[in-house]
Image (cartoon, rainbow, N blue to C red; front, side, top):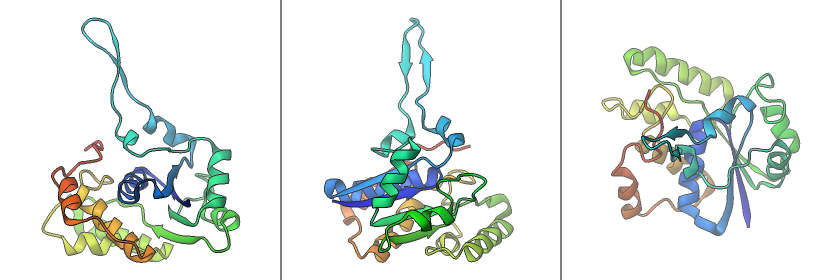
Length: 205
């Protein structure tokens, strides 16, 4: 089975989910926790209902299956990956999954696909897009999300400043498919996801 690892923020969890949906069980596709600070984002929220019962609410991150939240397991998995799809992470944020360490531990023939962290504020669109373009160029990314966003400028394709709509997730996934030379979703599958612009159920604020 081919191993594909994702490293990065909630945007990468979303992309991991969509690639899992696309490729099914043919591949071992997993997102790896890169910092303790992100752990609270993965936990289900528990509430008490009117009858005093504890209810565990469904969490958006649960859509992405088989996430790895232990560093040892994550490192071993990344070492085995044929494809690593990641965002650049500074050593101050993660001593294990910063870019320098990923390059050290990856297999010699592993395919790397680098994405930017997406932050777009439509209230200050021009400046926000310019900052994204600057980060993309500085980090030498493989997929320029700024081009996708600007191509669709009349439409807001972000749920919040850092949470993409279903449309943007799928557009990025198309670019990943081109790089990996694999088929994208069928038209019917694409339309199924597009019925809900927040299929991942990400927070919108």
